[in-house]
Every structure is written in C-alpha cells, then in structure tokens.
Length: 234
Image (cartoon, rainbow, N blue to C red; front, side, top):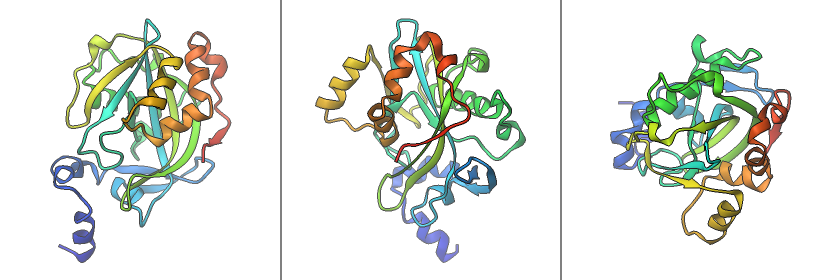
C-alpha cells in the first residue's frame, strides 16, 4: 500500500471504513464555476480537504400530499456531515453518459437522483418518476465537515410533490431516520430551539429564503425554476 493511500485511510473512523469507503472511487463530475464539465475525479479526491474540488451534486426535497417536508438524518458512518439532519436525499451524478446529460430537461441529474432515492430511501424504482422531478435551480456552496473532509458543489435542487412516504424503506447504512415537518414556521422553531445539527447547505437554503419560496409555491414550481443562474450561497 502506498504512503498516500495509508494517509487517506487514516482519515477514516472505523465505521466509515466498513461502509462508506466502498463509494470513494465513484467518479464525480468536476466542473468550473459555470458548471462546464472538466474531468472525472474520485469522490475521495473531490471531498478531501487537501484536494477539495468543485463538482456537481443534487439535493432532493420531498413534500407529501399534505405539504409536509420529509427530512433525513444522515447515518453516523457518513464520510461528510455524519448524524446531521438535511433534506430528503443528497448525492452526486457520476461521470458517465447516463448521468452527465444536461439537456434542457437535465435528464442526467434526474436519473442520478432516482438512483440515490432508491439506494438511500429504499424507494422502488418503478415508483420514482423522473418526469415528476422539478429542477428548481443550481446553487454553489462550500462547507467543511471537519479538518479532513468537506463539500464544494454546484448543487441542483430537485423538488418532488405529492410523495407517498409509505414508499420509504430506509437503507440504514445511509440514513439513520426521517422526520416530517409541517410548515416553514415549524422548521424555524426547530432550527431555533433544537440541539440537533442541520447540514450547512440546508441552513443556507433557509437563510437565503429559497426553501420558504419553494414550500409556499409548491403549486407553481415551473414559474420558480431558473435554469440560467448559478446562485452563490457562500
């Protein structure tokens, strides 16, 4: 084993080594600040503090027919932001023809989101209809999880309405728990009073009033969608 590999392995907690290290060779789509693809790089490379590299990601927000928002608590063995609450599903499209396509419908991003909804939340692939995924916009942010790992992403936000939570069968290697939040007012109270941690990107969506707008206007998401702008959150 190379010295470089030994050094990287030493960054892991034992629980991370057992599960999440399996995914560190996945090839992310590195991009410039205009979201132009540059080259494939491993998940390890993109998220390591020493080589933190801008790459594509997505964040899925699930809302039930009662307009409740579903949030997840990331599993304790996650490489970045373990045991942190966030939106229903967060991950990355991969450097392959199936998920790189960013035509007017962003079909590649939606295919990647379907893959991870099935993987993390255990949703049957037949239930996940990519035509029901509304891509709202792109958001650039950077956040460190600890001294070793971080996120540096252009994040495609996807909203799915009228979701049936009975379809969820959690993959406990990825998600520790889910919860339902009934309104923006309830969420603000939770963020104000809870000792639980929420992800930095989730906080940014709240602080910049994006989430409030999406939640309020679930019935007219097409009007909110902005495919041209890349919003810099921090």
